[in-house]
Image 1 (tube, rainbow, N blue to C red):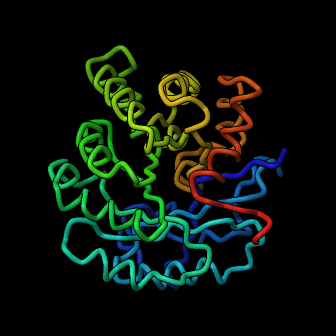
Image 2 (cartoon, rainbow, N blue to C red):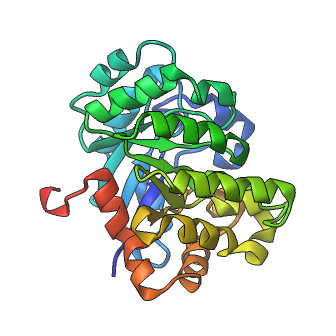
Image 3 (cartoon, rainbow, N blue to C red):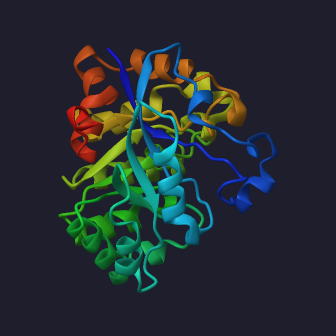
Length: 281
């Protein structure tokens, strides 16, 4: 069965500026579709997720990605800025972009109070009115704020990226781990919220083998596989970023789930969430 990877990145600093790459020398080069780690050919379809480029290049990035020689590309999640009063104009700018299925802002390094604000929730509702999904890349200590936002926009399809960046090194039984688990359970109680089993290598580093599947299992028990999807987070969580071949992440997740769960995680959930119909490609 071909896996649909719900979270992959490509970029070329010569095409679209990414200031953050200057602080990440191992990643400060072009990563293109032909370079993607397919886990030995098991992955054959992808959803591209924005790469925190300069916000003014949101439409340019979406168009550039869709123009690449990438037969397996099934969806594009473009960049958007939230709670600044112009989300309608930003979405107008993105309208008509090929394969556009969702949007994502950069939230993980920002204050939680913005996520919990009424302005943020209003923007979420506007995103839903355009038929788009919303990727939420937040850290574990921002989960309560995301619960507030998601509860105010029940019609918006929201997916939590990277399990909410759990405190992997502190451990599941730590105070931080307990707070993460509570946040996951509160989000899972909202039917419009989904979760991506992705990004753990970037949080775990050399400790990946010790925690592989542990945090995924907590999220899966809370959300159910019908609201969970696999994402490689390549190249950030790949060999170029954190030294982990995608096959190891795939194998670790597969070992933690049943056959029935696996079919949801590797395609069915992402297709339903993003509204992907392969026959239309």
